[in-house]
Every structure is written in structure tokens, then in C-alpha cells.
Image 1 (cartoon, rainbow, N blue to C red):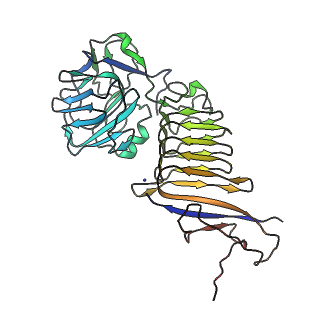
Image 2 (image 1 turned 120 degrees about the horizontal axis):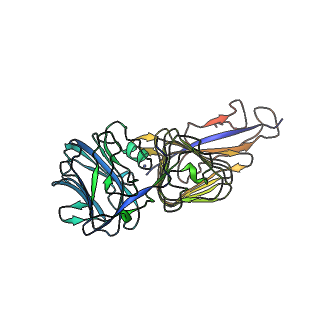
Length: 398
């Protein structure tokens, strides 16, 4: 009877609910007089976040009051009046570059509670926004980095803990921007017309309400994502399965969610991937991530035999001292492939299928193994499956 086993090698690498909608909308500001005013607003804010599409590298985004405001200066996100602030761009803390002519998610946290007593969107003093805004959220607590990442590509319900104001921008017409929470901090559009309600490609969220097919429009809050769309995969409805070539921009696979690449073809993510749940690259999948891959704690990414993953920038399987699990699988048909063009931080588990020798006793042959990564030794914590096989064993010379 043929016998085989797997050798798993851990190479330590150094270097880090939603309601459905037929279409997502945003508001477009003209840069000369358009803005949104609020007669009342939250009195205790510690996190503010939104999606922004700036037309140029210098933009006035919003103010909470006359001394607390957020703007883009020479392409750099800047927050004034926020104590011990942390700035996030597209989920990454400490990143402040905001590109013009594309959608970016921004978030700012502050250690001191801020009274949004003069809250305005699209205007700071006498300066105005030339661009678009979507999905503005105000929180009464300091949001964690993992929370910002997981929810930035999800449409919220409005009743989340700590959410004190939430604007979806999906009214499509009219002069009122509705607060999606029960606090009713509605805004009033100033000098804006119905034509300023425009289609938004800030993000689209998987609903799985119709089927598991990625390519079905009714499974999404804003149709099937394309290379411009930022995409969120929450744990809801039918789990998505990719059965044709896809392209999308930033991708977030949320905790408890599963994403299956089940098409033997090429796929491209034109940005970063944040894997918080489980992603499976099934045999024949060729996935390219032009940005970086971030594997958050408890996440899993499995590169099945004959699948391959190419990362244009960096791989982080260890974030904040906690590991995700990336496994390159192997069987008698072949082994998965991983190429990282930048640096890597954390652990990768590589399986190596080795066919059984022709003998049936403990001395039936030698097998030479090596690390799949240059200049890194094989660590002691390898495993053999099945455990009672003798095709691999150690020999100590006297």
C-alpha cells in the first residue's frame, strides 16, 4: 500500500449587518460654497472617520468645532486640535498620505473627548472641499486599529456601540443628510443641488442575499466590485465563491468570514488585502496583490496545491505581536507557491509532500529537506503526518 506524509516547516521571517442598497451614493462638493451644516451634533467624540475623494492635494474636509478640524495639506492628512491623535489612511495607523482622484478611507482618534459644537462637512472657516465625501461616522470611544480595518468597508446598521452619528449619504435627492443613528443629528445641505448626489465607488459590501456567486450583482450593496472598488466581505448570508477572473481595489475579509477563490485563472487586487477571516486559494488560482497582505490575529490564508500568490509589496503575518496563519499546502499533485517582492514579518507554514519509499520498515530511505526561504534554518517545531511514518528520521553521528 502506498504511504505518504507531510512535513510542515515553519520558517520564521523577519521584517508586520448591513441593510442592502441597490446603489451607494456620495455628495460632491464644488470647492467654492458647498458644505453641510448641523444645528446639533454629538458633544463627546473620540473617533471620526469617513471616505474621501479629493480632487486636488489640498482640501478642507470637515470641522468638529472652530479649533478641531481635519484637512489635506500637500497630500498629507492633517488633524488640528486632536489630543494625542492617531491618524489612519486605508486602515493603516501612522500613514498620512492621501492620493487625489481616488477614494481613501481616513480615521482620526483623540485621547480627549471633543464637543462637535460647530460641526460642518466640506468647510473649515472660509475654505471649502473640492471633492466627494461618503460614510461619515462619529464615535464616542477610541476605535482600535483592528476595528477601523474590519468595518471600513462595511455599511453599518446605526446601532453599534459607541456610534453617536452616522451618515450613509444614500438619500439620492433633497437637502437633508440623515443621521442613521437614533440621535437624529441630521445635516442641512448648503448651496447644493440634487445633481450633487452622485454614484459612489468608495466601497461595496458583500451581502450574499441571493447566492454564493461573486459575479451576481444582487449579492452586493453596490453591484459587483471592479478594479476601482474597495471591497468588504463580512460574515453574512452565503459565503462568496469566486468562479471567474476578478479585479478589485482594497479588500477586507472580516472575522468569521470565508472567501473562496474557486476559479482556475488570474485575479488581481489593486491595493492592500486585510485578511481577518479565512481565505482559500484553491488549485489553479493565480492571485496577485499589488500592495501588501496583512494577516490579522486568528486569520487563515491557505494556498492550496497548484495555486500561487504574488505579493507586490510586503507580507505581515504578525501584527501587534499576534500571528495570523498562512499555509502553503502540498499533496501528490503539487505544492502551492508564494512570492513576496518586499519584506516579510511573521511566520509562514510550508507543507512538503514526499512520496513513500518502496520499503516497509523503519530503514526504508532518507529524505533531504531544506528551508523554502534562503538563509533561514529549519526550526525544531516541524510535524510529520501521519505520525507513525518512518520516511523521515534523524541520524546522529557518534
